[in-house]
Length: 254
Ligand SMILES: [Zn+2]
Image 1 (cartoon, rainbow, N blue to C red):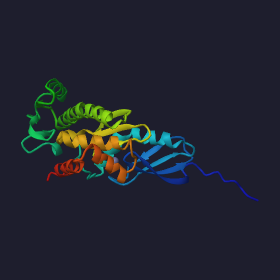
Image 2: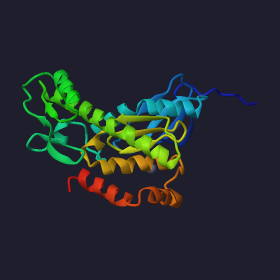
Image 3: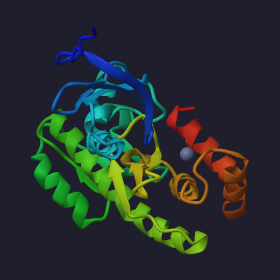
């Protein structure tokens, strides 16, 4: 005699390792009706619990849709990735200036934290194309204004670079997104062909952003980081290593 025991709600039916964009995911299947996402450490794998029969594509979409939240949680948990956290202080020099495209000038200067509201600061930044004063009522507003200014800056340069390199390399990205990510400078979804960049790339010389653009587009020609991948990189951007090393050096403050 055998009894077919139906596992109860919450019981783990299976475990599976998955890679979603830049994330390692530990996927557990349960008798549940919705997906749940857990960020347990700054750099370790994410934990996703999903309904028994939910398709992997749906689960990947669920994780991708929460990228910004994941990055925020990781930062809170003490991420020490290559990019710094998004607290404005980390991105500001002692004299209140912020490096923009590798130029440590007062391109974005926090003049006075007790000054005008960040909403106005954003408008000022927009109207002068990045060479403007950044003023905010509170640190949080300054940080938010800084982040949005850097996002706009990054987008403004990343999109044309992607278009230029798409044409040169004969590939096509489905979309270009700029996120507040700290654990990766860029990522590429091999299924959807979306390419993503960290808005904090706007701190460093444009040659560094260009290296990340070519890297992510190379993934559309060769998925893994294998010999062929780096041969393609070298064919299109012979000095990619120097650019990558420069970004590493600068982002570590060396
Ligand atoms: Zn890569």
